[in-house]
Image (cartoon, rainbow, N blue to C red; front, side, top):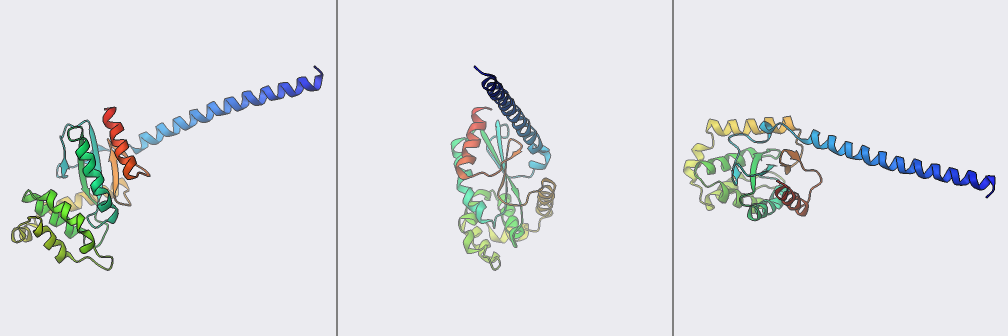
Length: 219
């Protein structure tokens, strides 16, 4: 073996060692970055769930999914069956909490309809009806809230009682608190989901169910 061969062999070993070290360092930095990101995404629980927040499932469920949604939001309408499927699959393991995010024109009135329905124990059927028939009232050129009220009435809401209840001070308080929390959390789009206190990014219908399933299996 000549001197040139020895030099090439030594250089190759050095590059391999450097590459291996760089790979390990890269993995370590990636893991540290992911851990830091996970810590950053965990938020104050008080901002996520308020005593007034509508919820489904046991209060002591090991997994909590919080959805910030807008009744006028088309994507929220699309994800509503996904959330229902999560509730169906994990009836005792998952608690679903809803928070109002009134980004669209007329959404504040839609929330008043929902809250008036909650006072009559009609929240879920009215929510389902408003989202299912959303294209009929949440129009792109402006909402038709008379239609929204008619839809709610068709879902069992006592419209005469709800008309007076809609301006109940506590409903205004719910709207104000939820929007304050939306601002504090920096939420800019709906739906936004938090799973056990951490914001989900770049989710799909399939990944949302998979993430919840993983959380349940590891709870």
